[in-house]
Image (cartoon, rainbow over all chains, first blue to last red; front, side, top):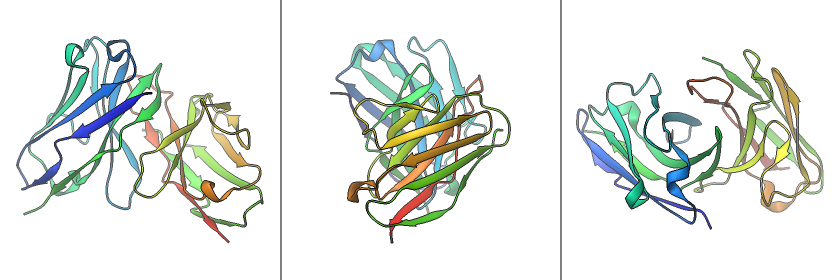
Length: 117
Length: 109
Protein backbone atom coordinates (compact mmCIF):
# COMPACT_ATOMS: atom_id res chain seq x y z
CA UNK A 1 0.00 0.00 0.00
CA UNK A 2 1.34 3.40 -1.00
CA UNK A 3 1.85 5.64 2.03
CA UNK A 4 3.05 9.22 2.16
CA UNK A 5 3.40 10.83 5.57
CA UNK A 6 4.22 14.52 5.88
CA UNK A 7 5.71 16.20 8.92
CA UNK A 8 7.36 19.45 9.92
CA UNK A 9 4.46 21.86 9.73
CA UNK A 10 3.69 24.39 12.42
CA UNK A 11 3.39 28.05 13.31
CA UNK A 12 6.08 30.37 12.00
CA UNK A 13 6.42 34.14 11.86
CA UNK A 14 6.51 36.02 8.55
CA UNK A 15 10.02 35.94 7.16
CA UNK A 16 10.78 32.70 8.96
CA UNK A 17 11.75 29.27 7.69
CA UNK A 18 10.40 25.75 7.95
CA UNK A 19 11.43 22.39 6.53
CA UNK A 20 8.78 19.87 5.58
CA UNK A 21 9.47 16.16 5.22
CA UNK A 22 7.56 13.35 3.55
CA UNK A 23 8.25 9.70 4.33
CA UNK A 24 7.28 7.34 1.54
CA UNK A 25 6.59 3.61 1.73
CA UNK A 26 4.81 0.88 -0.17
CA UNK A 27 6.45 1.61 -3.52
CA UNK A 28 9.90 2.04 -5.08
CA UNK A 29 10.41 5.68 -4.14
CA UNK A 30 13.50 6.12 -6.33
CA UNK A 31 11.49 5.31 -9.46
CA UNK A 32 8.96 8.10 -9.12
CA UNK A 33 8.93 11.85 -9.51
CA UNK A 34 7.33 13.70 -6.62
CA UNK A 35 5.47 16.93 -6.02
CA UNK A 36 4.38 19.29 -3.29
CA UNK A 37 0.85 20.69 -3.59
CA UNK A 38 -0.73 23.08 -1.11
CA UNK A 39 -4.22 24.11 -0.09
CA UNK A 40 -4.94 27.35 1.77
CA UNK A 41 -7.68 27.09 4.41
CA UNK A 42 -11.06 26.75 2.70
CA UNK A 43 -9.48 27.19 -0.73
CA UNK A 44 -8.54 25.09 -3.74
CA UNK A 45 -5.38 23.23 -4.66
CA UNK A 46 -2.15 24.85 -5.86
CA UNK A 47 0.81 22.94 -7.32
CA UNK A 48 4.04 24.10 -5.64
CA UNK A 49 7.03 22.10 -6.83
CA UNK A 50 8.21 19.04 -8.79
CA UNK A 51 11.32 16.89 -8.55
CA UNK A 52 12.25 14.04 -10.86
CA UNK A 53 13.23 10.60 -9.58
CA UNK A 54 16.97 11.32 -9.76
CA UNK A 55 16.65 14.98 -8.66
CA UNK A 56 18.01 16.05 -12.06
CA UNK A 57 14.90 18.07 -12.91
CA UNK A 58 13.23 20.51 -10.53
CA UNK A 59 10.50 23.04 -11.08
CA UNK A 60 8.66 25.56 -8.92
CA UNK A 61 5.49 27.59 -9.12
CA UNK A 62 6.22 31.28 -9.66
CA UNK A 63 4.66 32.04 -6.28
CA UNK A 64 7.44 30.20 -4.41
CA UNK A 65 10.40 30.41 -6.81
CA UNK A 66 13.52 31.69 -5.08
CA UNK A 67 12.11 31.02 -1.61
CA UNK A 68 11.36 27.27 -1.54
CA UNK A 69 13.73 24.39 -2.29
CA UNK A 70 12.60 20.85 -3.03
CA UNK A 71 14.93 17.91 -2.49
CA UNK A 72 14.86 14.18 -1.92
CA UNK A 73 16.93 11.38 -0.42
CA UNK A 74 16.21 8.13 -2.23
CA UNK A 75 18.24 6.13 0.29
CA UNK A 76 15.87 7.34 3.02
CA UNK A 77 12.70 7.24 0.89
CA UNK A 78 12.11 10.87 1.80
CA UNK A 79 11.04 14.09 0.14
CA UNK A 80 11.69 17.55 1.55
CA UNK A 81 10.58 21.14 1.11
CA UNK A 82 12.74 23.88 2.58
CA UNK A 83 10.63 27.02 2.89
CA UNK A 84 12.35 30.37 3.52
CA UNK A 85 11.11 33.96 3.65
CA UNK A 86 7.64 32.73 4.50
CA UNK A 87 4.66 35.01 3.90
CA UNK A 88 1.12 35.10 5.22
CA UNK A 89 -0.10 33.75 1.89
CA UNK A 90 2.00 30.61 2.31
CA UNK A 91 -0.38 29.48 5.06
CA UNK A 92 -1.79 26.17 3.84
CA UNK A 93 -1.89 22.42 4.21
CA UNK A 94 1.07 21.07 2.28
CA UNK A 95 0.64 17.72 0.58
CA UNK A 96 3.34 15.40 -0.64
CA UNK A 97 2.15 13.72 -3.84
CA UNK A 98 3.49 10.95 -6.05
CA UNK A 99 3.80 11.58 -9.77
CA UNK A 100 3.22 8.72 -12.19
CA UNK A 101 4.16 9.96 -15.67
CA UNK A 102 2.80 13.46 -14.87
CA UNK A 103 -0.38 12.17 -13.21
CA UNK A 104 -0.49 12.91 -9.47
CA UNK A 105 -1.85 9.59 -8.27
CA UNK A 106 -1.28 9.40 -4.50
CA UNK A 107 -1.35 12.09 -1.85
CA UNK A 108 -0.28 12.20 1.76
CA UNK A 109 -2.59 13.47 4.49
CA UNK A 110 -0.85 16.83 4.60
CA UNK A 111 0.85 19.02 7.16
CA UNK A 112 -0.42 22.46 8.15
CA UNK A 113 1.85 25.47 7.87
CA UNK A 114 0.62 28.66 9.52
CA UNK A 115 2.49 31.89 8.89
CA UNK A 116 1.43 34.51 11.40
CA UNK A 117 2.86 37.00 13.82
CA UNK B 1 -0.90 29.90 -17.20
CA UNK B 2 -3.76 27.62 -18.16
CA UNK B 3 -6.85 28.56 -16.16
CA UNK B 4 -9.29 25.79 -15.26
CA UNK B 5 -12.89 26.81 -14.60
CA UNK B 6 -15.35 24.41 -12.98
CA UNK B 7 -19.12 24.68 -12.92
CA UNK B 8 -21.29 24.77 -11.02
CA UNK B 9 -19.62 25.81 -7.77
CA UNK B 10 -22.17 23.77 -5.83
CA UNK B 11 -24.40 20.95 -7.07
CA UNK B 12 -27.31 19.73 -4.96
CA UNK B 13 -28.25 16.16 -5.82
CA UNK B 14 -30.41 13.49 -4.21
CA UNK B 15 -28.90 10.06 -3.52
CA UNK B 16 -29.39 7.78 -6.51
CA UNK B 17 -29.52 10.66 -8.99
CA UNK B 18 -26.96 11.50 -11.68
CA UNK B 19 -24.46 14.30 -11.18
CA UNK B 20 -22.73 16.07 -14.05
CA UNK B 21 -19.74 18.30 -13.32
CA UNK B 22 -18.04 20.51 -15.91
CA UNK B 23 -14.48 21.73 -16.31
CA UNK B 24 -13.24 24.15 -18.95
CA UNK B 25 -9.63 24.96 -19.82
CA UNK B 26 -8.54 28.38 -21.08
CA UNK B 27 -6.57 26.63 -23.85
CA UNK B 28 -6.36 23.11 -25.12
CA UNK B 29 -4.93 20.54 -22.72
CA UNK B 30 -5.55 17.62 -25.10
CA UNK B 31 -6.64 14.71 -22.88
CA UNK B 32 -4.21 15.58 -20.08
CA UNK B 33 -6.94 16.10 -17.53
CA UNK B 34 -7.50 14.48 -14.14
CA UNK B 35 -10.36 14.54 -11.65
CA UNK B 36 -9.92 14.29 -7.88
CA UNK B 37 -12.36 13.80 -5.02
CA UNK B 38 -11.73 15.43 -1.66
CA UNK B 39 -13.72 14.87 1.51
CA UNK B 40 -13.47 17.19 4.53
CA UNK B 41 -10.21 16.75 6.39
CA UNK B 42 -8.88 14.27 3.83
CA UNK B 43 -6.36 14.35 1.04
CA UNK B 44 -7.56 14.38 -2.57
CA UNK B 45 -8.06 11.01 -4.24
CA UNK B 46 -7.44 10.42 -7.93
CA UNK B 47 -10.61 9.37 -9.75
CA UNK B 48 -9.93 9.87 -13.45
CA UNK B 49 -6.85 10.56 -15.56
CA UNK B 50 -6.34 10.94 -19.29
CA UNK B 51 -9.79 12.61 -19.22
CA UNK B 52 -11.60 9.26 -19.22
CA UNK B 53 -9.55 6.48 -17.57
CA UNK B 54 -10.66 5.45 -14.10
CA UNK B 55 -7.91 5.13 -11.53
CA UNK B 56 -7.35 1.85 -9.71
CA UNK B 57 -10.26 0.91 -7.47
CA UNK B 58 -12.61 3.65 -8.65
CA UNK B 59 -16.20 2.44 -9.10
CA UNK B 60 -17.70 2.31 -12.57
CA UNK B 61 -20.35 4.91 -11.63
CA UNK B 62 -17.62 7.52 -12.11
CA UNK B 63 -16.91 8.39 -15.74
CA UNK B 64 -15.03 11.16 -17.47
CA UNK B 65 -15.26 12.56 -20.97
CA UNK B 66 -14.03 15.37 -23.15
CA UNK B 67 -10.84 16.64 -24.75
CA UNK B 68 -9.29 19.93 -25.70
CA UNK B 69 -10.98 22.52 -23.52
CA UNK B 70 -14.26 20.95 -22.38
CA UNK B 71 -14.49 18.10 -19.88
CA UNK B 72 -17.19 16.37 -17.87
CA UNK B 73 -17.22 14.14 -14.82
CA UNK B 74 -20.40 12.11 -14.44
CA UNK B 75 -21.46 10.18 -11.36
CA UNK B 76 -24.23 7.94 -12.61
CA UNK B 77 -26.02 7.19 -9.33
CA UNK B 78 -24.84 9.15 -6.32
CA UNK B 79 -24.03 7.19 -3.19
CA UNK B 80 -23.75 8.73 0.28
CA UNK B 81 -19.96 8.46 0.15
CA UNK B 82 -19.81 10.52 -3.06
CA UNK B 83 -20.78 13.81 -1.43
CA UNK B 84 -17.53 15.73 -1.54
CA UNK B 85 -15.62 18.40 -3.45
CA UNK B 86 -14.35 17.50 -6.91
CA UNK B 87 -11.40 19.15 -8.62
CA UNK B 88 -10.22 18.96 -12.20
CA UNK B 89 -6.52 19.42 -12.97
CA UNK B 90 -4.61 19.83 -16.21
CA UNK B 91 -1.15 18.35 -16.64
CA UNK B 92 -0.61 19.21 -20.28
CA UNK B 93 2.18 21.75 -20.14
CA UNK B 94 5.86 21.09 -19.60
CA UNK B 95 7.76 22.32 -17.65
CA UNK B 96 5.02 21.61 -15.13
CA UNK B 97 2.79 24.51 -14.20
CA UNK B 98 -0.11 22.28 -13.43
CA UNK B 99 -3.31 24.01 -12.49
CA UNK B 100 -6.47 22.99 -10.74
CA UNK B 101 -10.04 24.15 -11.05
CA UNK B 102 -11.60 25.87 -8.06
CA UNK B 103 -13.73 22.83 -7.25
CA UNK B 104 -17.36 21.74 -7.37
CA UNK B 105 -19.01 20.81 -4.11
CA UNK B 106 -21.57 18.01 -4.48
CA UNK B 107 -24.01 18.23 -1.59
CA UNK B 108 -27.08 16.32 -0.53
CA UNK B 109 -30.35 17.81 -1.80
